[in-house]
Length: 292
Image (cartoon, rainbow, N blue to C red):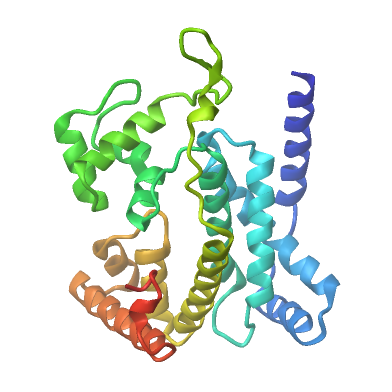
């Protein structure tokens, strides 16, 4: 308990220190980003990242209910913002806070999926969305925590996320149950443990390298494709497709002062641009599983 209290105190001290940091004006941000990109000025990088560390804390706090220490989530978010700084192009008309937000969120989400449980939560984007949104959605439809979802509730969530009712059922059971120990004895004589009956279905080293290479390549291509969009198109794609909550057409229409049909047209045009950009990079786009 003492160690835990010390950890909490340390986290709180760090958060208080971060929240005191001044935000950067656009011109100051641009100068620091140029100094880092063109001259590898580490002091400039430190000031740039430190100014937006409060964004890391804010995003990390939204993932606390998955049971992971806040300090670990902040650390993963700091990795994400450092990676974003290494790729940030100050000549683009995008603020670093907007650009880095997606890297921070992706890094934290990956950490949650890796460490929350040894049981797989699903590999598709829809399954990951179900994992992160199930609690919020059940609250939104008026079904409180503590009991099982109704059939109507499961169907409504399945329709919203775009998965099967069976997937919702499995995820609900997974999130509501506790993990069992792999060292738990099995059998009448307690001669074996649960871990003795587990099969290793992890990818082979060759498969891991291929998957990692595909993911890194696609991530870089997607980032470059996004930069080819107009500022409004890029914002629509980021908020509609890349944001955890996924803004609606109505919300974006109000923000941009246009109809939701116009937003849909802009989204369609932007997605076509992205696909054309990616297709130009490979002979057969279906060779990349993430694009097929």
